[in-house]
Image 1 (spheres, rainbow, N blue to C red):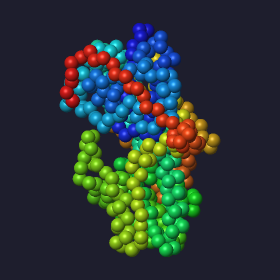
Image 2: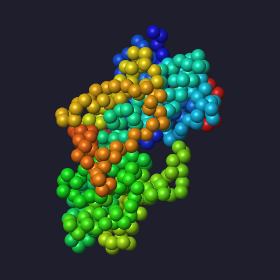
Image 3: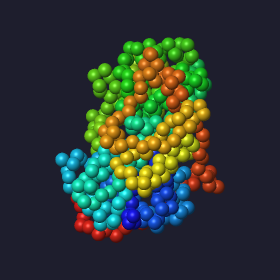
Image 4: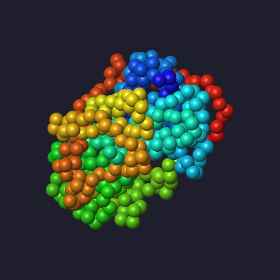
Length: 418
């Protein structure tokens, strides 16, 4: 088996543990230097491949690569850039193969969500046709937890832990002030079409918190919602609302829609919390506070789930091992084997069954009134949040996070306009 180099890239919104997957890929590749040469990383994701902005990870020390496991965000830079279909823009895919050929890259590890699974699948198909086979492995990542086949996605468990804990803490605050001040706290969480993160916020019900949750899977019924909130306040003196950014009206319009689009063509969201808070204020008159978790929820490495960190690393490691075994166009998956105690193993799924498939939260996970979660949902969620994997802290009380040198590789091709 001839020695080929590898290309690794991070895609889409980064997470508290995507760097742990990068660590898994690079450390495992280094153990197999007889089969995998240099691991190049894309500077700012797949754009780095198109523009030939490659990072030579062999220039990083073993200590720096190991430190990725406890560092949030994307160590090599990520991007929101979706390659068009092969029919629409074949030149981009051909450019990828040209760059791979120029740098003797035979392995492509793409760490991302649904859009990157689609790109990975197309690259594996086209490379064969162009006479330069590339083993394309998709390493799963998404805080939305919406990739199919895998039990869960790295990044989600840590977001779930952060949101559950933050919702609990803020609810304690509201409870202490409710007699004379704030009676409503609204927290907005990520989740465009799937309510997994919102469901994590709903877990505070188990800790005595009156909570109403708004999921993307359930149409927003204003009258029913206000009645539920009012009943909670009358019984408990206060109420917490967890709203997914993807909560929408019966006509399909997002509560948070701003009329703008991101680079993937998705509606730009953000602002459901103040909308919901003002609906309550106008109808019921309760004083409120609201918060948008936004980047905080996905960057919170200080409160990462140990289970999530372990799985993120293991899936990066498995991606390399699958490639060395000859696999192509697949995604390593998490297979749950038991809830209590929580046990799991590594599986794999063909990218043809992963690309462009979105996994919603099952309706049996949502309570009958549409505002809470079932015991089955709790049994699914709690194991993913288990354990703490704290980073080391310095003498100033700040976490020790690594910033890589990210040394560039000399270009061999002409410039390419995106």
